[in-house]
Length: 115
Image 1 (cartoon, helix red, strand yellow):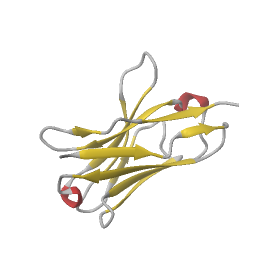
Image 2: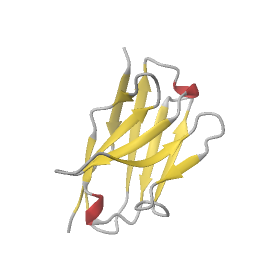
Image 3: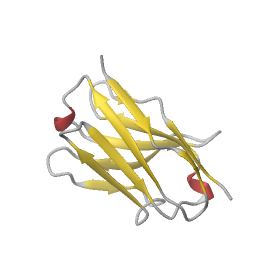
């Protein structure tokens, strides 16, 4: 079975940091591009960041560029999202996504940024 399990979400004050993890199993993680998405209530699910498997090249959406860092550990089949300088607008459920056919999705982890 394919599983993507996100963790690391929680409540943080504006300006704070969180590190999200996504543990993957059931597919060839080391040859799969991984992405993080987020979805706020009443909003569309938006791409946050992406990391390729071969070169580990990365992509960031404009609203997180310079604040978030995506990384991966192929030995642990885990992708991370380090989130710094968090803002209330970052409040959302964050989802791990594996680019395949079909794509695989985790259940999400809640991030709430509030004073």
